[in-house]
Length: 340
Image 1 (spheres, rainbow, N blue to C red):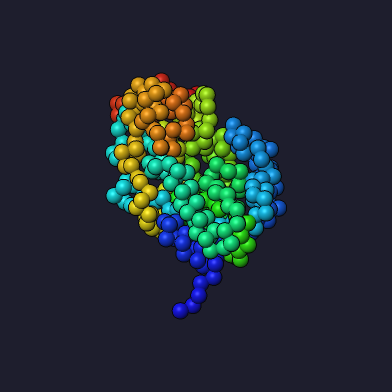
Image 2 (image 1 turned 45 degrees about the horizontal axis):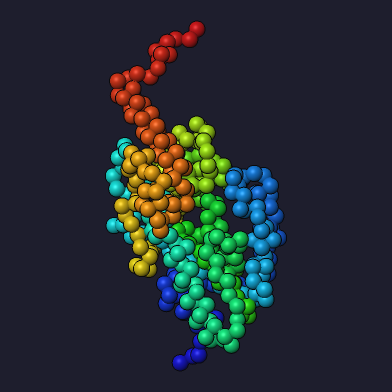
Protein backbone atom coordinates (compact mmCIF):
# COMPACT_ATOMS: atom_id res chain seq x y z
CA UNK A 1 0.00 0.00 0.00
CA UNK A 2 1.44 3.36 -1.06
CA UNK A 3 2.32 5.78 1.71
CA UNK A 4 0.41 9.05 1.47
CA UNK A 5 2.29 12.32 1.34
CA UNK A 6 1.51 14.99 3.93
CA UNK A 7 -0.53 16.85 1.30
CA UNK A 8 -2.58 13.73 0.59
CA UNK A 9 -3.09 13.10 4.30
CA UNK A 10 -4.32 16.67 4.77
CA UNK A 11 -6.78 16.37 1.91
CA UNK A 12 -8.01 13.01 3.15
CA UNK A 13 -8.54 14.40 6.65
CA UNK A 14 -10.34 17.49 5.32
CA UNK A 15 -12.81 15.26 3.47
CA UNK A 16 -13.25 13.11 6.57
CA UNK A 17 -14.13 16.24 8.55
CA UNK A 18 -16.97 16.96 6.14
CA UNK A 19 -15.60 19.30 3.51
CA UNK A 20 -16.40 18.45 -0.10
CA UNK A 21 -13.21 19.65 -1.81
CA UNK A 22 -9.75 20.81 -0.77
CA UNK A 23 -6.77 22.33 -2.55
CA UNK A 24 -3.43 23.82 -1.61
CA UNK A 25 -1.63 26.96 -2.78
CA UNK A 26 1.30 29.06 -1.61
CA UNK A 27 1.20 32.43 0.14
CA UNK A 28 2.44 34.56 -2.75
CA UNK A 29 0.29 37.60 -3.61
CA UNK A 30 -2.60 36.96 -5.97
CA UNK A 31 -1.99 37.59 -9.66
CA UNK A 32 -1.31 41.18 -10.74
CA UNK A 33 -4.32 41.08 -13.06
CA UNK A 34 -6.55 40.12 -10.12
CA UNK A 35 -5.04 42.89 -7.97
CA UNK A 36 -5.65 45.54 -10.60
CA UNK A 37 -9.17 44.30 -11.25
CA UNK A 38 -10.00 44.43 -7.53
CA UNK A 39 -8.43 47.87 -7.13
CA UNK A 40 -10.30 49.26 -10.14
CA UNK A 41 -13.59 47.78 -8.91
CA UNK A 42 -13.18 49.37 -5.49
CA UNK A 43 -12.09 52.72 -6.93
CA UNK A 44 -15.14 52.80 -9.22
CA UNK A 45 -17.53 52.74 -6.26
CA UNK A 46 -19.09 49.47 -7.42
CA UNK A 47 -18.61 47.99 -3.94
CA UNK A 48 -21.25 50.35 -2.56
CA UNK A 49 -21.14 50.87 1.20
CA UNK A 50 -18.95 47.81 1.90
CA UNK A 51 -16.14 49.89 3.41
CA UNK A 52 -14.53 46.79 4.92
CA UNK A 53 -13.45 45.74 1.41
CA UNK A 54 -11.27 48.88 1.20
CA UNK A 55 -9.56 48.16 4.52
CA UNK A 56 -6.47 45.93 4.82
CA UNK A 57 -6.03 45.88 1.04
CA UNK A 58 -2.44 44.60 1.26
CA UNK A 59 -3.48 41.72 3.49
CA UNK A 60 -6.39 40.91 1.19
CA UNK A 61 -4.11 40.42 -1.80
CA UNK A 62 -1.17 38.85 0.06
CA UNK A 63 -2.08 35.93 2.36
CA UNK A 64 1.41 35.84 3.92
CA UNK A 65 0.56 39.18 5.54
CA UNK A 66 -2.05 37.42 7.70
CA UNK A 67 0.42 35.18 9.53
CA UNK A 68 4.13 35.69 10.17
CA UNK A 69 6.17 33.03 8.44
CA UNK A 70 3.20 31.69 6.46
CA UNK A 71 4.13 29.28 3.67
CA UNK A 72 0.89 27.67 2.50
CA UNK A 73 -2.86 28.16 2.23
CA UNK A 74 -5.21 25.19 2.40
CA UNK A 75 -8.52 26.06 0.76
CA UNK A 76 -11.64 24.02 1.50
CA UNK A 77 -15.11 24.05 -0.05
CA UNK A 78 -18.41 23.04 1.53
CA UNK A 79 -21.33 22.26 -0.78
CA UNK A 80 -24.62 23.79 0.38
CA UNK A 81 -26.94 22.88 -2.48
CA UNK A 82 -29.95 21.40 -0.65
CA UNK A 83 -31.61 18.16 -1.78
CA UNK A 84 -34.78 18.59 -3.84
CA UNK A 85 -37.04 17.71 -0.92
CA UNK A 86 -35.38 20.44 1.16
CA UNK A 87 -34.54 23.08 -1.42
CA UNK A 88 -37.92 23.48 -3.13
CA UNK A 89 -39.50 26.68 -1.88
CA UNK A 90 -42.87 26.59 -0.14
CA UNK A 91 -45.71 27.94 -2.26
CA UNK A 92 -45.32 31.74 -2.21
CA UNK A 93 -47.92 33.68 -0.31
CA UNK A 94 -48.68 37.36 -0.68
CA UNK A 95 -47.58 37.99 2.87
CA UNK A 96 -44.24 36.17 2.74
CA UNK A 97 -40.73 37.03 1.56
CA UNK A 98 -38.10 34.76 0.01
CA UNK A 99 -34.79 34.08 1.76
CA UNK A 100 -31.66 33.10 -0.17
CA UNK A 101 -30.68 29.44 0.13
CA UNK A 102 -27.51 29.85 2.17
CA UNK A 103 -29.40 31.71 4.90
CA UNK A 104 -31.67 28.70 5.41
CA UNK A 105 -28.69 26.92 7.00
CA UNK A 106 -27.07 27.49 10.34
CA UNK A 107 -24.38 30.15 10.19
CA UNK A 108 -21.63 28.66 8.04
CA UNK A 109 -18.95 30.67 9.84
CA UNK A 110 -19.75 28.88 13.09
CA UNK A 111 -19.98 25.51 11.33
CA UNK A 112 -16.74 25.67 9.33
CA UNK A 113 -14.36 27.29 11.83
CA UNK A 114 -14.27 24.35 14.29
CA UNK A 115 -13.63 21.94 11.41
CA UNK A 116 -10.69 24.03 10.20
CA UNK A 117 -9.31 24.11 13.75
CA UNK A 118 -9.52 20.30 13.81
CA UNK A 119 -7.67 20.19 10.51
CA UNK A 120 -4.98 22.42 12.03
CA UNK A 121 -4.70 20.07 15.02
CA UNK A 122 -4.28 17.13 12.63
CA UNK A 123 -1.46 18.89 10.73
CA UNK A 124 0.19 19.98 13.96
CA UNK A 125 0.27 16.35 15.09
CA UNK A 126 1.86 15.31 11.77
CA UNK A 127 4.60 17.94 11.99
CA UNK A 128 6.87 19.20 14.75
CA UNK A 129 3.99 20.69 16.73
CA UNK A 130 5.48 24.17 16.50
CA UNK A 131 3.72 25.24 13.32
CA UNK A 132 1.32 28.19 13.29
CA UNK A 133 -2.14 28.42 11.74
CA UNK A 134 -4.78 31.05 11.02
CA UNK A 135 -8.36 30.01 10.31
CA UNK A 136 -10.24 32.16 7.80
CA UNK A 137 -13.93 31.87 6.99
CA UNK A 138 -15.12 34.85 4.93
CA UNK A 139 -14.55 37.47 7.63
CA UNK A 140 -10.74 37.65 7.26
CA UNK A 141 -9.35 40.09 4.66
CA UNK A 142 -8.44 37.51 2.05
CA UNK A 143 -9.11 37.26 -1.70
CA UNK A 144 -10.44 33.77 -1.18
CA UNK A 145 -11.95 33.22 -4.62
CA UNK A 146 -8.64 34.01 -6.33
CA UNK A 147 -6.86 31.66 -3.92
CA UNK A 148 -9.45 28.92 -4.52
CA UNK A 149 -8.77 29.18 -8.26
CA UNK A 150 -5.02 29.05 -7.64
CA UNK A 151 -5.51 26.01 -5.40
CA UNK A 152 -7.18 24.17 -8.26
CA UNK A 153 -10.74 24.15 -6.93
CA UNK A 154 -12.62 26.00 -9.67
CA UNK A 155 -13.01 29.27 -11.54
CA UNK A 156 -14.81 32.62 -11.35
CA UNK A 157 -17.97 32.65 -13.45
CA UNK A 158 -19.66 35.49 -15.30
CA UNK A 159 -21.85 35.84 -12.21
CA UNK A 160 -18.63 36.78 -10.34
CA UNK A 161 -19.27 33.79 -8.09
CA UNK A 162 -16.74 31.04 -7.53
CA UNK A 163 -17.81 27.88 -9.37
CA UNK A 164 -16.52 24.40 -8.63
CA UNK A 165 -16.77 22.36 -11.86
CA UNK A 166 -18.53 19.49 -10.06
CA UNK A 167 -20.12 21.10 -6.99
CA UNK A 168 -21.33 24.21 -8.82
CA UNK A 169 -21.65 27.74 -7.42
CA UNK A 170 -23.33 26.91 -4.10
CA UNK A 171 -20.17 26.35 -2.09
CA UNK A 172 -18.75 28.06 0.96
CA UNK A 173 -14.99 28.63 1.02
CA UNK A 174 -12.69 28.51 4.01
CA UNK A 175 -8.93 28.80 4.37
CA UNK A 176 -6.22 27.58 6.70
CA UNK A 177 -3.10 29.73 6.43
CA UNK A 178 -0.08 27.93 7.88
CA UNK A 179 3.67 28.09 8.33
CA UNK A 180 3.89 24.48 7.10
CA UNK A 181 5.55 24.26 3.69
CA UNK A 182 3.28 22.23 1.39
CA UNK A 183 3.40 21.37 -2.29
CA UNK A 184 0.84 23.57 -4.09
CA UNK A 185 -1.74 22.26 -6.53
CA UNK A 186 -1.99 23.47 -10.10
CA UNK A 187 -4.50 26.28 -10.77
CA UNK A 188 -7.82 25.50 -12.38
CA UNK A 189 -8.32 26.23 -16.05
CA UNK A 190 -12.01 26.91 -16.51
CA UNK A 191 -14.52 29.53 -17.58
CA UNK A 192 -18.13 30.08 -18.55
CA UNK A 193 -18.17 29.38 -22.29
CA UNK A 194 -21.14 30.13 -24.53
CA UNK A 195 -23.49 30.89 -21.64
CA UNK A 196 -24.89 34.24 -20.51
CA UNK A 197 -27.83 32.95 -18.50
CA UNK A 198 -26.83 34.67 -15.26
CA UNK A 199 -26.47 38.02 -17.04
CA UNK A 200 -30.00 37.82 -18.42
CA UNK A 201 -31.48 36.45 -15.19
CA UNK A 202 -30.24 39.28 -12.93
CA UNK A 203 -33.40 41.28 -12.08
CA UNK A 204 -31.60 44.61 -11.72
CA UNK A 205 -28.82 44.47 -14.31
CA UNK A 206 -26.05 44.26 -11.70
CA UNK A 207 -24.14 41.94 -14.07
CA UNK A 208 -22.95 43.46 -17.35
CA UNK A 209 -21.97 41.78 -20.60
CA UNK A 210 -18.60 43.56 -20.42
CA UNK A 211 -17.77 41.65 -17.23
CA UNK A 212 -18.55 44.39 -14.72
CA UNK A 213 -20.45 43.79 -11.50
CA UNK A 214 -22.15 46.70 -9.73
CA UNK A 215 -22.98 45.72 -6.17
CA UNK A 216 -25.09 48.89 -5.85
CA UNK A 217 -27.68 47.20 -8.09
CA UNK A 218 -27.40 43.66 -6.66
CA UNK A 219 -30.44 42.50 -4.66
CA UNK A 220 -28.22 40.51 -2.30
CA UNK A 221 -26.26 43.67 -1.53
CA UNK A 222 -29.38 45.83 -1.25
CA UNK A 223 -31.17 43.48 1.14
CA UNK A 224 -28.17 42.59 3.32
CA UNK A 225 -25.40 45.20 3.20
CA UNK A 226 -27.12 48.44 2.15
CA UNK A 227 -28.61 50.50 4.95
CA UNK A 228 -31.16 53.27 4.55
CA UNK A 229 -33.62 53.82 1.72
CA UNK A 230 -33.55 51.81 -1.51
CA UNK A 231 -34.10 53.68 -4.78
CA UNK A 232 -37.67 53.12 -6.01
CA UNK A 233 -36.50 51.68 -9.35
CA UNK A 234 -34.46 48.99 -7.56
CA UNK A 235 -36.99 48.41 -4.79
CA UNK A 236 -39.64 47.54 -7.39
CA UNK A 237 -37.30 44.91 -8.85
CA UNK A 238 -36.69 43.28 -5.49
CA UNK A 239 -40.04 41.53 -5.80
CA UNK A 240 -40.65 39.36 -2.75
CA UNK A 241 -36.96 38.86 -1.90
CA UNK A 242 -36.52 39.85 1.73
CA UNK A 243 -32.96 38.53 2.20
CA UNK A 244 -30.61 37.85 -0.68
CA UNK A 245 -31.21 36.66 -4.24
CA UNK A 246 -30.50 33.36 -6.01
CA UNK A 247 -31.49 34.19 -9.59
CA UNK A 248 -27.99 33.97 -11.09
CA UNK A 249 -27.45 30.63 -9.32
CA UNK A 250 -30.74 29.07 -10.35
CA UNK A 251 -30.04 29.46 -14.06
CA UNK A 252 -26.41 28.28 -13.92
CA UNK A 253 -25.81 24.98 -15.78
CA UNK A 254 -23.15 24.04 -13.21
CA UNK A 255 -25.76 24.42 -10.49
CA UNK A 256 -28.22 22.17 -12.30
CA UNK A 257 -25.60 19.43 -12.70
CA UNK A 258 -24.24 19.69 -9.14
CA UNK A 259 -25.00 17.06 -6.49
CA UNK A 260 -26.89 17.91 -3.33
CA UNK A 261 -24.84 18.51 -0.20
CA UNK A 262 -23.29 15.40 1.32
CA UNK A 263 -22.65 16.76 4.83
CA UNK A 264 -25.85 16.09 6.73
CA UNK A 265 -24.42 17.64 9.90
CA UNK A 266 -24.73 21.06 8.26
CA UNK A 267 -28.28 21.83 9.35
CA UNK A 268 -30.82 23.17 6.85
CA UNK A 269 -34.03 24.83 8.08
CA UNK A 270 -36.68 24.59 5.38
CA UNK A 271 -39.07 26.82 7.31
CA UNK A 272 -36.64 29.74 6.93
CA UNK A 273 -37.02 29.75 3.12
CA UNK A 274 -39.91 32.21 3.39
CA UNK A 275 -40.58 34.70 6.17
CA UNK A 276 -44.00 36.02 7.14
CA UNK A 277 -43.76 39.72 6.36
CA UNK A 278 -46.31 40.85 8.92
CA UNK A 279 -44.51 38.87 11.59
CA UNK A 280 -41.18 40.47 10.63
CA UNK A 281 -42.72 43.94 11.01
CA UNK A 282 -43.98 43.04 14.48
CA UNK A 283 -40.59 41.92 15.79
CA UNK A 284 -38.97 44.02 18.49
CA UNK A 285 -35.20 44.40 18.51
CA UNK A 286 -34.98 41.78 21.25
CA UNK A 287 -37.29 39.28 19.53
CA UNK A 288 -35.40 39.75 16.24
CA UNK A 289 -32.13 38.88 17.99
CA UNK A 290 -33.67 35.81 19.62
CA UNK A 291 -35.44 34.55 16.48
CA UNK A 292 -32.43 34.83 14.17
CA UNK A 293 -29.68 33.87 16.60
CA UNK A 294 -27.31 31.52 14.77
CA UNK A 295 -28.81 32.46 11.39
CA UNK A 296 -27.10 34.45 8.61
CA UNK A 297 -30.27 36.60 8.53
CA UNK A 298 -29.07 38.26 11.73
CA UNK A 299 -26.37 40.00 9.66
CA UNK A 300 -28.79 42.38 7.98
CA UNK A 301 -30.07 43.76 11.27
CA UNK A 302 -33.54 44.43 12.67
CA UNK A 303 -34.17 47.76 10.97
CA UNK A 304 -32.99 46.67 7.52
CA UNK A 305 -34.98 43.42 7.55
CA UNK A 306 -38.13 45.39 8.40
CA UNK A 307 -37.34 47.84 5.57
CA UNK A 308 -37.07 44.84 3.22
CA UNK A 309 -40.42 43.51 4.47
CA UNK A 310 -42.12 46.83 3.72
CA UNK A 311 -40.68 46.81 0.20
CA UNK A 312 -41.90 43.25 -0.38
CA UNK A 313 -45.41 44.18 0.80
CA UNK A 314 -45.48 47.26 -1.43
CA UNK A 315 -44.41 45.16 -4.41
CA UNK A 316 -47.09 42.56 -3.66
CA UNK A 317 -49.75 45.29 -3.43
CA UNK A 318 -48.63 46.79 -6.73
CA UNK A 319 -48.64 43.38 -8.43
CA UNK A 320 -52.16 42.62 -7.18
CA UNK A 321 -53.38 45.97 -8.47
CA UNK A 322 -51.76 45.34 -11.84
CA UNK A 323 -53.37 41.91 -12.09
CA UNK A 324 -56.82 43.34 -11.32
CA UNK A 325 -56.43 46.05 -13.95
CA UNK A 326 -55.29 43.51 -16.51
CA UNK A 327 -58.22 41.21 -15.74
CA UNK A 328 -60.79 43.96 -16.32
CA UNK A 329 -59.01 45.41 -19.36
CA UNK A 330 -58.03 48.66 -17.64
CA UNK A 331 -54.80 49.65 -19.35
CA UNK A 332 -54.78 53.34 -18.57
CA UNK A 333 -56.43 56.52 -19.78
CA UNK A 334 -54.69 56.50 -23.18
CA UNK A 335 -55.91 53.03 -24.15
CA UNK A 336 -57.86 53.21 -27.40
CA UNK A 337 -57.07 56.86 -28.10
CA UNK A 338 -55.84 57.76 -31.54
CA UNK A 339 -52.90 60.12 -31.77
CA UNK A 340 -53.15 62.57 -34.64
